[in-house]
Image (cartoon, rainbow, N blue to C red; front, side):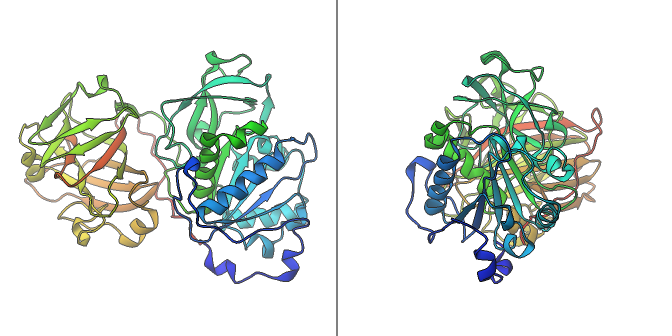
Length: 470
């Protein structure tokens, strides 16, 4: 939340929102949208100016965002007047939703104001025809991620969900079947953005992106700035905004853009799945010690009992990036688990404790034993960790990057720990990986465990991304 900016609310700026009104945020839960998931008074501007085709679903979209704001603790203003794009007025908002805008909608001064807003940490949400906007403004092209090229008729299609930790897609299964107008884009944003979902072009007619067809994505920075960007290609039809799954998808994008929820939105390519949510993908894993993990229909593994360890027995790893999504499932913050790296094969879970390193999951413990710490050896940067951490019930993403004896830890795209092993009795240079089931009262869920061999694919991922709050 940009509390600093909230102090700069002027009557003159408010008058620019012609024909707009916003009511006080409500706290009632909305079960259709997953219940209230956070928000501490964020403010959102919905912008819907069109200089080309105007979608008749825009009023439905505005109403949906207002409903989401009332249910989830953020206030909403709406306008189609570009005069709202001044530095002073934009400073009132945590994110701006470009709702099916089309054509050239801002003049040069307004563009400059919005660029500065985003670079300083403001959020952007693009919905559907936001990709059919401002083709000659390079900054906006980078921000939206890809521009519209064409579309076939409205029809059903299958969406493949690629990221199950982002709040915009965490509620979805592996596939999402829905009807909409499916855009083809002039470029593929995969190398610059984290793809959240893509279209299965074999499931409908008119796809023209060669089988790799992103339809929703996010970015953690644009032009090196601090802002956050989310885009979804859905939202052409009026029915979209009455669909609980799409409303929750839109909500998650807004929460990411405002900073109310954190996610790793760095581009991701070259990873091999070790656990993809299926029983078949567990055949190369072994359980050491007591307890186990329960596999749910939604593809998550939840710890049961302990002290035990589910470890990948098929091979060891040397120089690699390990990514996995996790959440504490209890109602409090006392759940305990961890991710182990650099240990030898063994049916004894204590072998991993005594010979490897645990990256802790337990936000209540002392600094060297709390979430993000190398357990017992080095605390995380707690200020950075706290900014990046999502609370119990929400998904988080770890990246553990091992190169030689160096171990770096990213939480939701933010670097929170950098540790180099100097213990001659341990080594990170070759070892196995595993996830811990800690105890009967500790329930931590995992999904989408994947690895990238850095020796075979040395292209480095971006360094630390800031938490984006301002």
